[in-house]
Length: 78
Image 1 (cartoon, one colour):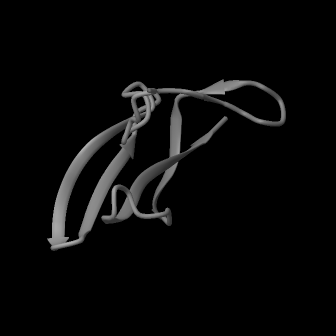
Image 2: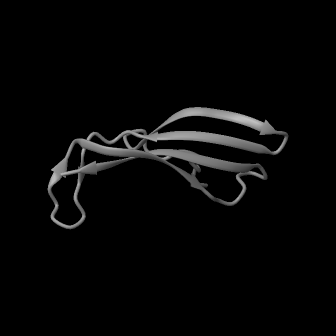
């Protein structure tokens, strides 16, 4: 049986907070961890953070528990 992972690779995201907000609900706050990202158009790598924003991700329940994922993402510029 394959082991299921709740979080992706720690090189990609870090867990800031995991909070039970009710008997069957959990809020997970993650932040992006990459130090540089390549431009999807030209392929040039950048370390300069242009802005930050919060994404709210929707997913199916995990083991019967409703999970809200909030991802603190960064936008990079060349």
